[in-house]
Length: 452
Ligand SMILES: Cc1ncc(COP(=O)(O)O)c(C=O)c1O
Image 1 (cartoon, rainbow, N blue to C red):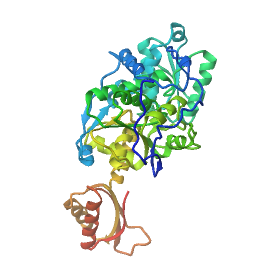
Image 2 (cartoon, helix red, strand yellow):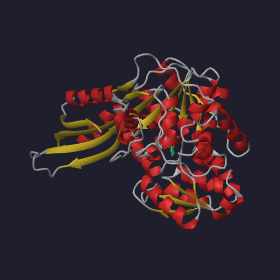
Image 3 (spheres, helix red, strand yellow):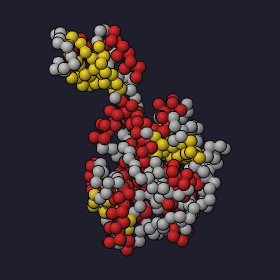
Image 4 (cartoon, protein in one colour):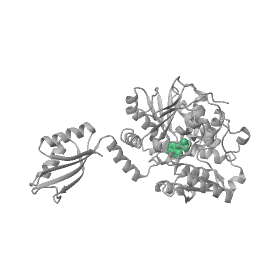
């Protein structure tokens, strides 16, 4: 085995709040279904063996001239918050907008001529779809992609744009995967699994090879986890070359299948799951990825939807980075302080494919979560100029009015009274409190105020 086990700090095993330190010394399980043929003899190597550093290095050779070596950018706000150098690995600017093309290309380029002839099929909420569509086009085979019926429109359009045939089936990626399996059985097309295949894992692991070259002094790598392909490959490469680097995975709390699976010692299916981070909304870890995660990953933590919104907003505002929710969970965990890290830290921005409408909602949500979006309703006398003076008072406090509603016909109001409902952008909770106090001091009756 190429990759040594991680060293775990004493007394940090097991579940602690929303943090799970992965037990790296448990025996290897033998559960699981075999992955599709990979062309590199994985059936022969058995399900309990891990992908090795040589596999990741071979994947990198295949990807030369195909994928971008994405930039590693410093993050000032995160470095300040964590008290040491913090970097962002920008896979959001990878070809097709996420790291996914790495694994997809490695897998598809190893298919035999006969398999290429039959074409490939995949299931995905978007990023794997685009990765497979792009990779299939580059290799010269045909791709059919099953996507959930509610998949973001830009991702559907982009997948079609890369030349794939898109079929909408199921409400979740898991359901789309069932449809893709059925299609593969019926047509003979080769199923390109989004995460649970050694070639895919090896391809994703190339992200870590780049990180180790770009930041040789790195102490912690933190990345999002859905089915576990990205973190598995990265952990293989990082632990083989630098066993002291801590590998931390982050899941959305509403779709976190790894923590209960690690406790159970086998992949567990979540009965329900939901998160704005559609890229990592996966209900069950893979068999192969589960094996890698429990042996090589140091810790899995979860973040809330608010944490993700705040991270997206920070990345956009301070980092000038367009990142999708699944791509921002590593940064979300750092910002929310749900994980202790040793710097230098590298957080992977794993994807940038965000629907502009979702971006709009997330920005509003992120502003509210950061206490920068205030809804306030005040009562005042119905005299000419009252509204103007209310607005100018808000302007004096350098708050920005986003929306205003002026009501006279409310039965709770006495004659000669009006109610004004305002949505105001502020600089944060303190600024909102100051503004409300100032309005009260000026004689306005504040009947409602909430950061929302
Ligand atoms: C942007 C983004 N980040 C992270 C992941 C997690 O990937 P994995 O299933 O390999 O854990 C995905 C999966 O599609 C993704 O699209």
